[in-house]
Image (tube, rainbow, N blue to C red; front, side, top):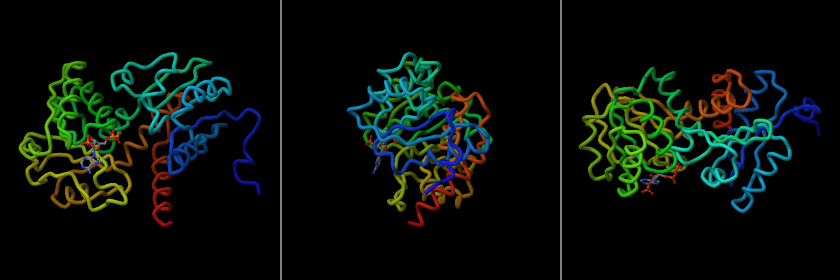
Length: 295
Ligand code: ATR
């Protein structure tokens, strides 16, 4: 049966995509194909299920097939770096790649996760982190990307708070060493005592994510200044319990969908040198998320 793609694919259609495992629930194909259609670009964006055993072959395949760009998701963001020709300095600092651009056979790796958060912060919350004190909850891959990006954006100080305190301490030490930004790592036990001196709080853990929607990071929102901005990178649901409680307390909030859209927008801009239609991408994400919840 013909679908809209079989009617519009041509001999010159370019290919973009995402590799990961699992990949079946990725929202990126819907977001990027909506953007490509809105831009009138002769490209298609395809999900590729690639196991950890086949990352090297996937990179060789990208070269051989002339795939113009790939996003990289769990669990390949670190492993893929070994097979690239060049890695952008920000991705090197973060130690992970989420975007690969095929520049006439030369594979260049980038990381747009932290940049996506920064653009969401600036454009959706009207907040420039320069000179501000940030608390990051979590110390995994997302915390690394956001922490380094905020340090590079001249945040005044970072507090990394994590369930496993040693990971928070290690990440904060690395950010401080590499960027000079003041950074400390603490466990959840000490978290509340740092809230009074926090301007921006970012949850990077999966607490609050579907189906565990009743979970929330262990913090007393009332200890934050009334002017603090509370951000969550969880986008399913977009209004997590943390975002709901922060909003009910009268504080400004930033949900996670924007970061997802802007990291995708940044990838599209790297691949095609165009201005990405961020609103179209957000609408596609929202549509896809509501459809997933209806199942
Ligand atoms: P990601 O790349 O999405 O950041 P990750 O690298 O697996 O994923 O990191 C997950 C983060 O969420 C970690 O900070 C983890 O805390 P630990 O280092 O203590 O494991 C945090 N996390 C996940 N589930 C959690 C839970 N139930 N309570 C508290 N923190 C949790």
